[in-house]
Image 1 (cartoon, rainbow, N blue to C red):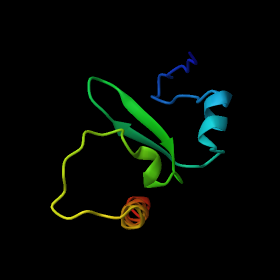
Image 2: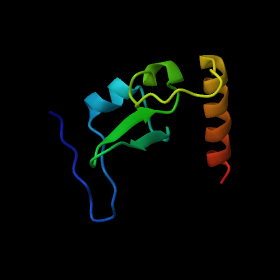
Image 3: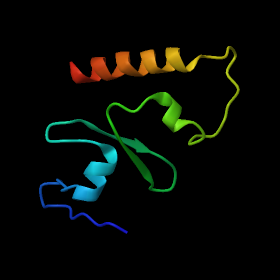
Length: 84
């Protein structure tokens, strides 16, 4: 178990081992994905959608979507969020 401490300003220092695992450096964006029951998945900004396979409950889409299209949609959404 690796522990970080939350400051009074709501900031947390991510331990070095976790930063290395996520392959993030100073000023990189980190994504927090809320899951169920108070759990959160933390990921670096450049992970492809294929790494998320199996993390969510499956719901059959009306039309199958390729991983390439998913990656493209994710990049567009991240760019939109970055400009806000």
